[in-house]
Image 1 (cartoon, rainbow, N blue to C red):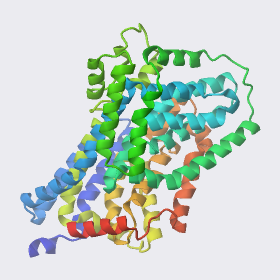
Image 2 (image 1 turned 90 degrees about the vertical axis):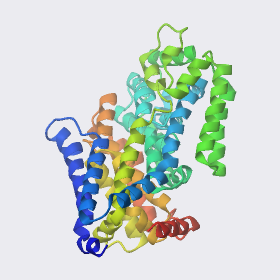
Image 3 (image 1 turned 135 degrees about the vertical axis):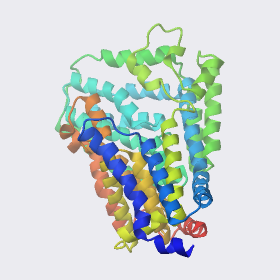
Image 4 (image 1 turned 180 degrees about the horizontal axis):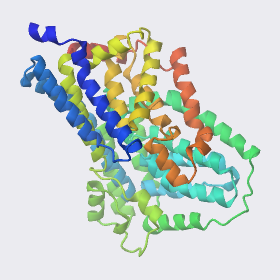
Length: 488
């Protein structure tokens, strides 16, 4: 072991990380934007990095048994949250086939009153994202409907686009069904609902301020609510109503999740209980068969199950053809490879050593939180991938948070405040490119009206400086610190 210790200098800890960063820059940045080539899948990047890290540790003198043991320990600790990702896919499929999500979609569309187009363009997508777990799906469905209404009444489309995107992102961050929300909790080893609760300290004030401004915009840029026709809206409403029946009992699956969140019950049993109730409701209230319900849980709902309906509008299929236990396969597989890589690096405590060196100036709680915000923003801007951002920055900072007695849910929040939340503002980011393709408006047109993210960029560091919602020296943070010490 003395020989290992002599050779295992900081440069040796940094080499696997530098190899990873090189692959990320080449595979996710240079290939698509400089060479006009497809990106390298994130799974391949982390697999290659894990192989490089293993070879390097073997060169340093560590045995395969020691390396494998550390990788298995990391994978074992991440297993509960990976199971949550499977459960979320089941929830989405069961909530759709039961009619729960379609009911919210139906009545959400009915709320689109042209007289309050700007604030509703913000508020309605919140509920769509919250109950579907996808900001992309929200923008691509109800966002398009709202945009069509806005065009018909000659509203300011730049404001509407910014409002729709902001609302979709806020709902996504508050949703236990969101992949990026779950990944942030997974990357920092905290409970999902603790992460969502922590996010409210920054995103909720941002959303309230943004909504207030959008209300004011309704008076500054008034629209004529009598202009235009709303055939697209009616077609969507009729399409949803033709394949689903609505009943107040369909609120039960949602109430179960909300109750579980309020009482801080274990996540997986809560989600599966909600899914079971949804499946029962689907059989009782809807016209779908038992096989349809089982298939929705297994591989996701498909509008083709509505055999009595000859045609279903494409936007309805886009929104509802999702879910099932394999719905989050990409997130699960990426998580496994990331855990493998990080577990291998745990062998010589590479990441904590690098962070201590690079962020040696960050000796106070505030400076550490601000550093993690900055690191999340830079990493997401470079990689265009929130999964990579959460795992890389989360692993880099969580032990530093433990050392200073800062609850890790502040870290998970920071990963999203300057990670997920800024994606639509970065012109080259895949998220921004998606929004532009759906809305038909450039980032330069809507960025200054995407008020949620702009306000959140200010609030996130501000509350860190003021110490609001940072849970300093809380029992949870101290417990996490002790657990981390025991692992080391």
